[in-house]
Image (spheres, rainbow, N blue to C red):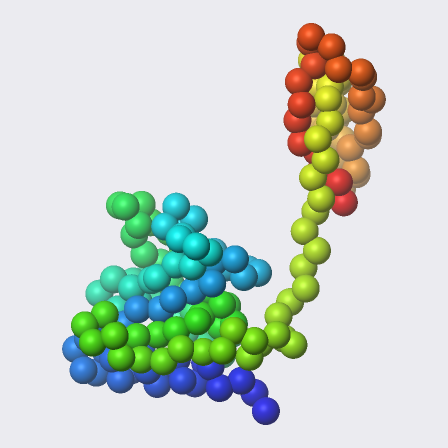
Length: 162
């Protein structure tokens, strides 16, 4: 059977809006593919006002909740996969529903993030790497640069290792 979360989310949303209340959702901001303004995340979660007057281009389907909204005056496109939505409720009455976090455990995408590695380099190595990347087409991997032993002219940087 398909998960019931998207259907319950839409039902609660309609019920809250039909009763002239303000729908809020709580989102797990640490979940894969979530795009929310990070400065408003607390304890890995964010509460979002999804009322028709607060958002634009609102879409709530079986896969995600997405919309455009302003946060501290700046426009931001929000994307929350359905499995990241933990609850929906009315701001005025706190009535609504919450969802078990493991309902989508078997469906969550597995995305392997690139690893980061600290590397020391001299200014000369950094300039050579920049020149090499400018002379390389986007489809070709950039050539590796040498690492020297740390001295007074080296500074650490991060390199993406795939």
